[in-house]
Image (cartoon, rainbow, N blue to C red; front, top):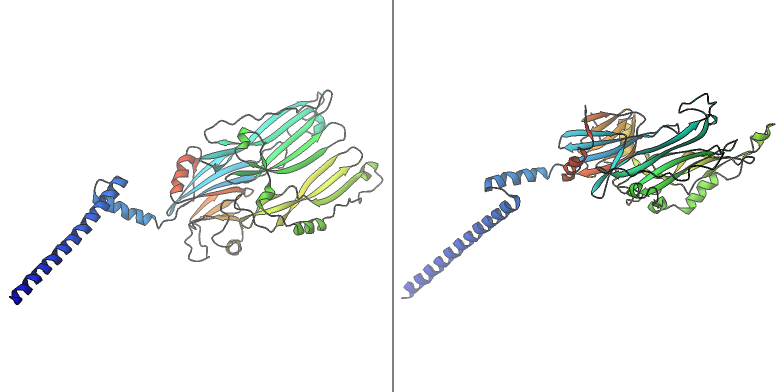
Length: 421
């Protein structure tokens, strides 16, 4: 009886174990089916084989690092009637392939959910005197009865129409000889703000002349809605060390120079000085980065007729870093010093946040490296684009991974495909 009882208990235990194992197997299989069904519903796949192939492709895609660079370039001009020439270049990476689109005559940057187009707006209203011996754009001012020539900067979303710039109170009254010109030049564009240099010149007749400039920061959207009404303070985006500022100013004392004395009474009235313009800060490019700087000004005053000429002759670097609230991405995959050692002709460089692309401006071209990141060594570029040797960077915005296609879907409507080599 004892042995029989033991056999029964053993049989019951064995049956219980088998039921438990079968139950576990059913749970695992059921869970797999539920997971597969969820994936099929979420992704819209028709069967498990299609889902498995797609999941494999997605896993492979996770190891690919794609980048897109929206680059803004400018070419400066010296004459007050000539506009600064702008260009937008979109460089889109798809694994080992590169596609380039370009737009002449404007800059473009993302702002919120839109892409903004930034371009010149020109107002030209002039009349020559009957005796004028030159009626070209380069005519001396004595050939004009009046001349109003304003080159301004406007910005608006792609697909919209720009608002007209309103020019009020440009006349100086009756019988005057009004000459007034202004010229904008973009110094920097981020994804929210734009920094504009404006040169200004005026004369009311006779020997009086006045010329000066400003560096002003605006929120991008207000250049379309409220023309130049929203002025931000660039000083809010970097800390100006007061001790350093005092050091800059002490190197350029504000005392007038009287070395122009001679027998000419007119020249004896001219006074000259240099000073650091701490109220006109700017950001500029140096060694592949945006840096903060202060202008060094030359100021000429004529005590007889009140004429003044204020010109920035140089810029003094402020060593403090520019805030990320103003800039987007401003690092390099490898130091600029290393780039210069390998490419002595390099004059600027930018690289993507995910490390997949390095772009180097070299004289009259842009070299593109699909950077692997193993070493700092740069071999032959993967692709090159032709540009002008006088063009310089004013904006560099990046898209990575899935956003490269998102940006391209919009930009392809406004930019044209360009050949690369």
